[in-house]
Image (cartoon, rainbow, N blue to C red; front, side):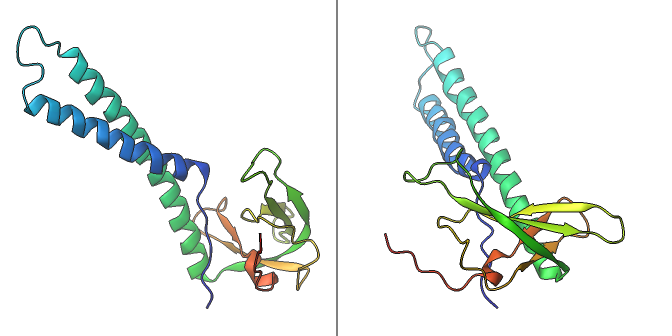
Length: 169
């Protein structure tokens, strides 16, 4: 079984930046306090409060964002491991022009699935692909793994309908 790529979102990346930054400032505030900063009357405690407070805010926000993205990845992993999937029809490839990585815009594959039980049409999007896969699909349908506990969570297994791609830049 090939390794699935669940990817990190902007929340997880911000969490990876904010958490260590906040931990550094909290630790710096504690070290400054332990070496005696703020103990004498002419040393303002406000300096330590700002270090500790801002560090705590960054740490808590970073851990929250990181935890949300780790949770999202875990739910997607649970959906894949459950084996419950539907075959969605590939509708097209879209460039995400609001995302810019190294001067290029990634693509996502749009997939449609019509649920015959409810009559609803579901639209799913794949992870970011940093190449245009329009002419590479080996099938017109892609497996979309669904989490039966949360119907809003799905994982589009785009790698199942693409050959092994080696990018040369």
